[in-house]
Length: 392
Ligand SMILES: Nc1ncnc2c1ncn2[C@@H]1O[C@H](COP(=O)(O)OP(=O)(O)OP(=O)(O)O)[C@@H](O)[C@H]1O
Ligand SMILES: [Mg+2]
Image 1 (cartoon, rainbow, N blue to C red):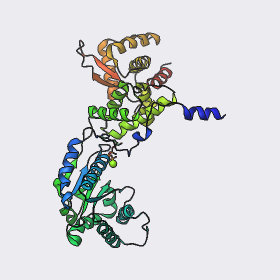
Image 2: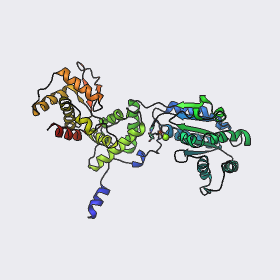
Image 3: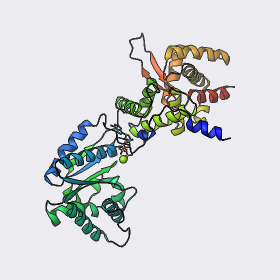
Image 4: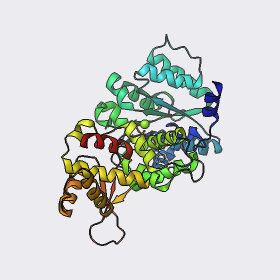
């Protein structure tokens, strides 16, 4: 009895350090965010002369807003420390702490973990904060992550109070700087007084990652988190392809993590594209039963051919020529007459439009319009099973 548990628990893993695939892990380098780090450094340089600055980081899901802020703030704190200056960096997630007092409580807990969570008004807490900073001869760098949640609930009072904090109470002794992060444009939701302290020019827009950028990010994680040579390069290519639909690095890392877990479950020593497809199928799938049923017979046979090839060759892509040969064989199996090349090509295009396959040009100087077909959304084995049942 005990041996099953023991065997599984002690079985080897392709993953060297699972912790590196956590969402809150901050890697040493951030590929494709160097310019943004440079820009933040320029914006916040005045802090080294004890002058407060504010900024806004905006961008779609998984574009590195949180990790960029963490990396930048940690670096700034350590550069300042070398100059004997104390910057207290506090990162608050406003989705979790969505009122003014909960945010301030989070800030005060940074200085005193036992600060009571009841009995103090916002104004009183601001005074406590001031005392804490004075006592430490420090300045505060506060990141309000997912700030839209706070503004939706409590408006911009706290942001106003914090940014005015410096002007009124202590001049330049213990300045408070704020970085707001949001997917949305929260500046337009600030009222005039808060906005006046938050200069529009201080906003940083992050774009969705391109496919190639995601590829670099995925490869960095593979190097850091996996044992050498346990992830095939096609797996990394496929993860980047899939995630590029959203430009979301979190999704890419989640796929990598899930595909790694799946590889371990099968007790294999190498991750292949099929494991990535399985991970994707568990995450989100546009290939539903109903959509499959609604396909015409020859579209089904075309898709079946693609699935068979990908499954057999354990590869991320199959080219159109190979797929067409297998299509002809499948047609015979189901006593259908194979259609001409232009028709076959049309079926592929339809499958692409419906989200079943993706097509990209091979770019390898082959004759004609050779395209590489991949199946990003569902494991080849699963789609094959389903189609074979439907075609029976
Ligand atoms: N340039 C990058 N290099 C390495 N890892 C990155 C990079 N950008 C993002 N990541 C990683 O991708 C994941 C998502 O990034 P992050 O949490 O910063 O996104 P976000 O923009 O804050 O998303 P959300 O809007 O959902 O909060 C994290 O695990 C992060 O470490
Ligand atoms: Mg975030």
